[in-house]
Amino acid sequence: MNLSIIIPLLNEEESLEELFSRINSVCKTANLSYEIWFIDDGSTDLSWSIIENLKVQFPQIHGIKFSRNYGKSQALHAAFEKAIGDVIITMDADLQDFPEEIPELYEMVKLGNYDIVSGWKKKRFDNVMTKNIPSKLFNAAARKLSGVELHDFNCGLKAYKKQVVKSIDVYGDMHRYIPVLAANAGFRRITEKEVQHQARPYGTSKFGTERFVRGFLDLITLWFVSRFGGRPMHFFGAVGTLMFIVGFLSAFWLGISKLIDVSHGIYGHLLTNNAWFFIALTMMVLGTLLFIAGFLGEMIIRTNRDHKNYHVEEVI
Image 1: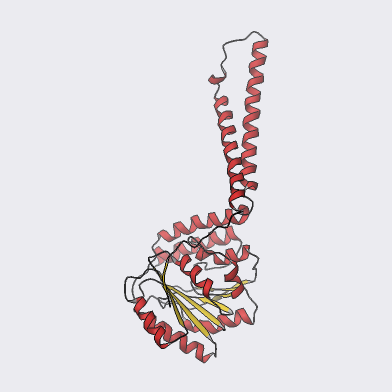
Image 2 (image 1 turned 60 degrees about the vertical axis):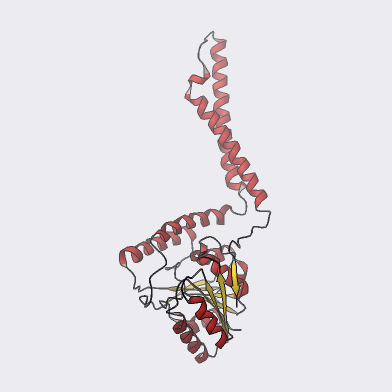
């Protein structure tokens, strides 16, 4: 199998048949064997019925139906587990991505030996204020914090070696950071390809401007996890130990000062009247708690964490 094409969707009944027709035409022309995985992420329209009808006519079509809307990351996770193609291509179902890009993406992975080829929507046909400008700021921050030099992290059109998607765990809202997850797993041959983009011909966008807020928070999480996720004691233990030592030394200094005063016959200076007493006590308590957090983190990562937090209602 040359290709596995993965398409998450939510209420895209108007575009599915046209999208499949174009994919089928492109793959036949390029002589590529393929399968398509449609992941219905809780649609309330006729999307699943259309997928079922297409499946009857075309056996290369497969579908996964979620019981409700879980998000794009969970949809990709479910399909990555089942994909068998040498090259995995992800794309959106709204026809803003061009299926005609598929053969070149495939060749870049197979012949260019890239681990990931990410689409770059250099010329966008979205609202400037609500999507284009926030997207530029978001991508700049993502490049700076992740060290992965891509212009468009959020482009849904990407191509992967099969080994990449089988080696990473996509969870939460981390779908936009798959290249970063892959780089952290050792897949460093990552490039991008300028792809065509068009205005959505049907329906409305399922993502609002709040996705950028969630995106920045996820980026901070990813940065922290990539640096300290394997050894949380290196962060929590180090910070906790430092705070405890500073607090202990401050308390020790206050105790010595009190003994010196008593040795000189000076009484009545209560330690509790000194603000440093409470600062030292707080730092010792917080330092101890952070150290315990690091220890518990070390214990937790030694257990198998299951990110499969979605319910599949039907698979065809």
